[in-house]
Each structure stands twice: as structure tokens, then as C-alpha cells.
Image (cartoon, rainbow, N blue to C red; front, side, top):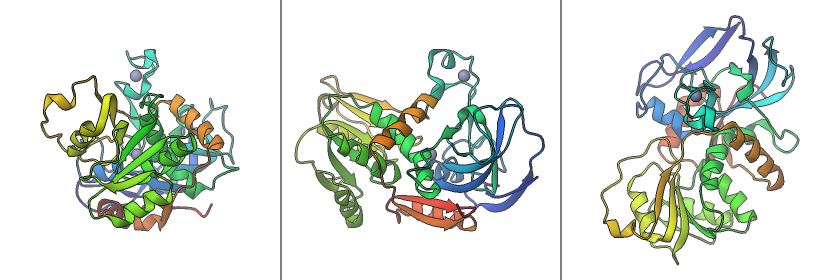
Length: 334
Ligand SMILES: [Zn+2]
Ligand SMILES: [Zn+2]
């Protein structure tokens, strides 16, 4: 069967229409008809060559909501007609040091959707069934579900890295991930401070509309010390800002896959057992937990829908900071 999609052929060039042939499915694979695919900042890092290129042409897209069309001979969890999600973690080796310790997000031989395997900027996708998620389709439609597959999941994993006792949490970069996780955190009774790019008044308004306690620019000081901070914007200097404003013992979580260099900073702002850590990828456990969490704490994803052919425009708008919320490609009308 022929799959049509938008592919990266050369770094820093627009995606181009591309087709490839799907032959037989491996026993553990499923073929999905793509309904919707979110556009993630990681796609932008791949297109711009900020992540090492592992395969071209490659169809990006790892926030995929699709309908099962065909299953490999060993697949039992899904049947044709099921609506499932395909995340960034497309496969692991299940035998390396990390996989054997439940840290499959750090697998030495991972597969990533839309990076090492063709992704969801396409009419169909082939995915490994054990890495797909059942989705709360009774509560959410495919377009609002798509951004949850990465912005939501990685957002959730970063939030999970914040110690539970943290009450006042700073969020830097109020885009796709932040706006989802903010809604969960606020329903759980947390106090949130949102930092957006200086002069981004729209961003401030957007954060306030979701109920954060304070919203301001990333060069401003928050009204009080924070217990923890999560950095979603790919800007290294924010790590320093966050460290300056978290209390002793506070944690600063860097959620992105890529970030500009972190400027040097005086040791005294790390002193006092402050912690800086990154978050890499996701585990399947994160996904299962996250979809349970958003059943209990419903979130409303703010999306802008583009046609598949408009993938370059969606990437451009994300890059230019013209989006509040998340960009989603509509593939088949869901
Ligand atoms: Zn592994
Ligand atoms: Zn992503």
C-alpha cells in the first residue's frame, strides 16, 4: 500500500511531498489510518538540524491519533477500528541496561516515531503495537487528543519530576506542553507562575486565562520564591533565571530535547541543594498514567488545525512563536 506524506529530505529545507510503500507488517506492528497529528517543537529541531539526522527522507510527526486498519499476526491488544495514539517512543530493545531497570526512556537502541521511523505527517503510519496507547476517545476528539501524545506526555513526565511537596511551581514557556500540564496542576491545587517571552502580551493573557496565579515576562522576578520550576522553552538562560528564583532544595526541570547553551552562573545560586535536571523521552508507564490523570482532571487543549499539506506553515508558525497552544495537522476527517 502506498503512504503519502510530507517528508524532510534535506535539513533546513521545507518538507516535501513524499510517498513510500508499506509491505507486510511485522508480527508486532499495526497499520493505522492517521486522523490527526500534532506538530511538536522536536519536529522543528529535526527539520532545522538541531538534532543529528539519522535517516532521510523521514516523515516527521509523533503525536499521532489513528484508526487501526490492519494488525500484525502477534498483535492482540488492538483490533481494526480501534482509535490509538502513537507517541515519540516508537520502540526499545528491552534488553539494555536501562530497559532492564524500567528506564526504557533512556534505551541505548531506541526507535523514535517521526525520527528513526516514519511518523504521522502522512495518510497512514506503521507502528509497533506495544508502544501505542489506548486513548480516552469518549472524552476527547482526535484533534484535541493529538497534542497530548507528546506535549501532554513529556509535559507530564516533567511535572512528575517535580517533588510532590512543591506547591509553587514556575513554568517557563507557555506553549503546547505548559498549557496542558498547567490545567492538571491547577486542578491538583498547585500555585503556578507562568513566564513568557518578554513583550508577549498574548502569552500572558493566555496563561492567565488558564488560571495561573501570576504571569509575566521571563526577565521579571516572580512575586515570591518558587519551590520548583519546569522549563519548556528551549532557552538555556532560563535555567539561570529559574535557579535564582527557586528556594533552597528546589528543583529546576529542563523538559526539552534541545536547548541553547546554559550561560555560566555563580555557584551560590545552585548551592543550598538546588537541583537542575533534564527529562528525556517517555516510558510507557508515563503514558498509561497520564491518560488516567486526564480522565480524572480533564484538560482542554487549545489547538490550531492545519491541513497535512500545510505542515510547513504549521512548523513556521511554531518557530515564529505565533501559536498559543498547539498546532495539529488534520489528515482524515475524524
Ligand atoms: Zn534498551
Ligand atoms: Zn514531541
